[in-house]
Figure 1 (cartoon, one colour):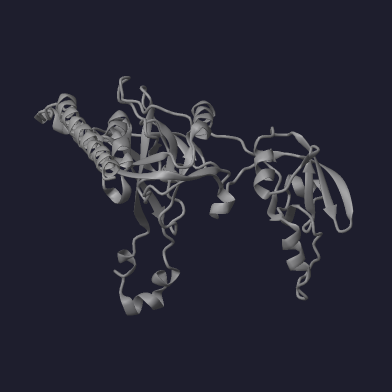
Figure 2: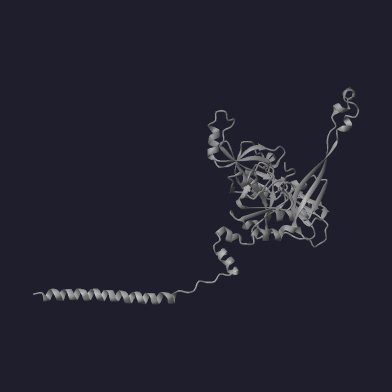
Length: 405
């Protein structure tokens, strides 16, 4: 009666023994395999250390690299960037009281001699060479009305500059120096390829500190001069957060490859943390005309205008003190008509809303300005306006803008 129990115990024991045996076999086989898969630790040399460091770099550090792309970009263009010093003599009116005998009795005859009738004004800016013959591109406000222009190269050489042409409307000027025919030339890129977020490198002589470089990014494109608050210009600026200060004016704005994509300008003294540059594609076209003709003819209509929206018009109309009711539509509101201008001759009136030009809808002042700028001198434009509750079709012949101000 006990044999079945003994038999069952033997079977259980044999099962445990078999499991232990299999466990031992697996452990031994594992110990034999692991050493065969392991390899000796690699020996790190001094050369390999730099490779390991590069592998651990952050994405930003890897983008810049051990040799900064900024250095390469500046080295590519640096010798073509120049400093421009200007001198201008202004004449002051002598105070009539200083010449009055009664006045001179109290202050003496020498008083009027101590009051200078002329004063020397000095200016500073930047520029860059665009041709080996010595053509320098800069801002118009750097050299405008200057009696003397001195151009200093990075190697210390100085030359007298002759202003070949100025265009106040686009704030561009071309200066010529005679320094042989083998000058360094800045490589010109294309501003049409620039995107928001691209690197921006400003080079120039801000505040008299020669050969200064600042780095930032392109923060926006096509920032109109009207938006910037510079109503006497016709430009769509490149906006950057690279530091641009007085003295940077006329210097190049570079991309990451060291190509000029814009011309720095510092005509907004209250701009904090942002700067503006004239797109190089615009500058190329203007520079060619300045070299050929010494000036650029700009067509104009002769209106001061404001972009009109239905909300803006409604806000005006609900004001009980508003002197005029404005149609609640999209268009360009005429705030003022310049006397003796093409617009005045065509019958444009203050309070008109410009809706179309040559059949194309006009919805902003910037759009209207660009349309006129791209037209020809003497071209007749068909302008549709709304005056009160009626629309009218007027013909305006463009004329040459004589004064940027």
